[in-house]
Length: 366
Image (cartoon, rainbow, N blue to C red):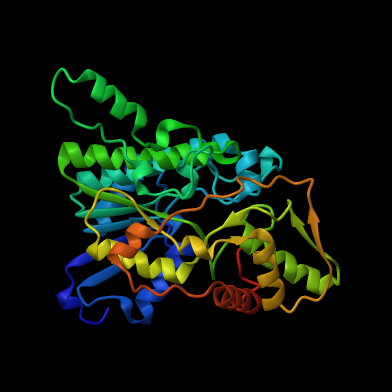
């Protein structure tokens, strides 16, 4: 890149061809990269990150000083329901849900991927790793809004002999491990929880600056628009596209009542750059729009219908599962750091995503 003589940071992005990776690549290319940064966006074919040997070889070849760790097996509600075990430790990469085992692609394991990336980062002296969690890590039964204090697993310190105070603190201290995640995606959720535990261990034992971000529902260009495999918003965009082509009704799975905070991938990318450069805590940070920007699935569907100029019938199939009713997250910590950060308005982001999908339909993941 221009100014290569000034390069001081070699930044490896695992999962560089996914939704968030593509967004980071675009933001960097559009001028938000810095002269002292060299960016390396990794394709899944570059290394089998389930393999300790291949992951370490990749790190030794690229010699990153910083890592944004995005590589994971991911999927929408119904794919998670079908393959919870796979999302924990026996995953496959890119195959559709609830189909015959003959169609499964080579296995990819979230637990092994995460462990290999973090340990290779430690062994090769990486200065900072930013991994990506999800709001699904939080217990299903809890109070809202969720915030970063609920992720802490630190044991409060008390004077020797002060057993009642210690027990009281342990019983009342908020932790993600106080309850199971929603049953629809427990495999993926538990695998993500372990990254936070590993980060704390590497910090306490070796002083490593490994941290995590917790985005809410991400969407944007280069998303997975597969109706069965993808998340709700890109799946709906694809459904509207097909309904327009066939002149049929648009069927939305579930009651449409659950509420979500959606974050545009390009906004998330800009926040990733800030975390990489400026955020020095090991504690996770939630990257999200405000609580006031939460929308129902019905409202999301209506925004897509408007953006795609769909004029057919809108039907809600209540025989399909809804998933968690809400996962409202507080962005108060983010706002303390970045009080003036401007998020792209939801309907504008939906419009831009729909336009990208229409233009790139032939090559979009679907």
